[in-house]
Length: 327
Ligand SMILES: [Zn+2]
Image (cartoon, rainbow, N blue to C red; front, side, top):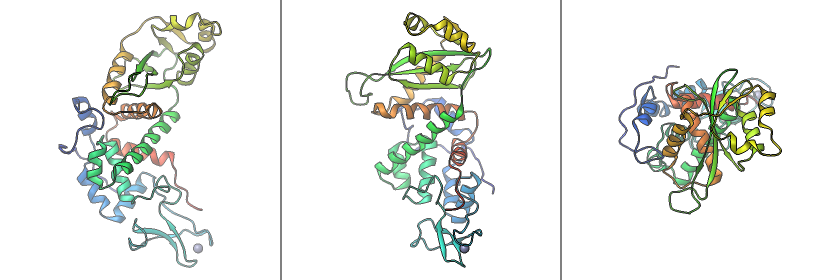
């Protein structure tokens, strides 16, 4: 089916979800070729269109097989009093019924499908929790919970993405502390260290950000092996901090993986630390949630140049949660 992508209208409803002062960069990100709320709303108000729309991303199944006769079931309209989604799978012969969300990302949620799609749209468009409550009519807690589910998608995508760098590619490594040991309103509960690595010379980065428990040589080895391809040229001004650790020989580790460690920086990672902190500084956050916010940041970076964040997100959901087609 055709889904029109249009320029987003001016949004007077809210600021960004994070900081109260939205930068021009944020606006550029979200207004590129974003699907408008009006377009989405018209789709969601027509059940058949909504289902076609969701199937087009692969987040709902195109078919479902009857558990009794093993033949494809039909998708039929039902009263919303019977099923809030308004459509169900049915085998007329065997009187077998299944929810259209069975075996999909939506299965565990009790919220109406239309509301879930709207919530997800709000997440992608950086709406605040408050404005999402107003748009969807859902409670604070419901919105916060669903945004967390969306960030879990971002984290899953980051895990699937693979390593950055490659033979001859320059990657810069750096570290930065987030939060404070003083428990002030609007600050991280305690100091947390985050390590990062980014491919140099790209506008919108291939980026890795990882909360680390320890800043030691063993963690450094893990971080680089986990995230950076063999053969990469790695810049940092932190090598000295790890070089004299007894259990870790930096040079032989580099030789084993064809890494080339250089004692220099370009400022790329430093610029990212500033930007990440600006984006994340708005809310009071728990240490346990920091990684998912970092993953969300990286996901937004990765879709920066790919048009509509919502379309990209839904396609990712379809790829991560391939709908089951039988019980
Ligand atoms: Zn059947």
